View 1 (spheres, rainbow, N blue to C red):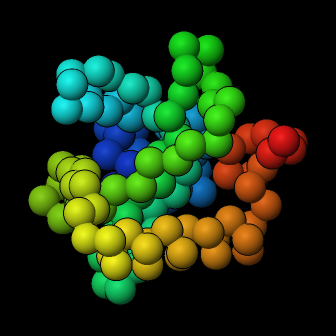
View 2: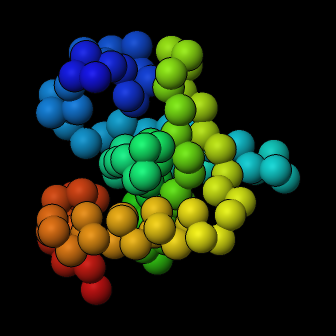
Length: 116
């Protein structure tokens, strides 16, 4: 898995350590609205991968701290995001993400000094 292209970018060398934290994706919502999001992390929970995305405004910032979490699958070589429909699954994933934030300083994940 060390050489897996998890972010889906063509410039990816397979190691997330080589990225400068500025990788973004554009989500198209059900209402056809497009939102640019920074990729915070891809993480496993109960044998599945999930991705945490930080929606950005037109200035490339996130003022409200909202985070989108999706099921993530790159097994076919093309990254795919799926909504998490099950409440129990979502709670487990959200708890795992919260634990990650507790274990690491949030400012390292989003490039901010404080979360106020």
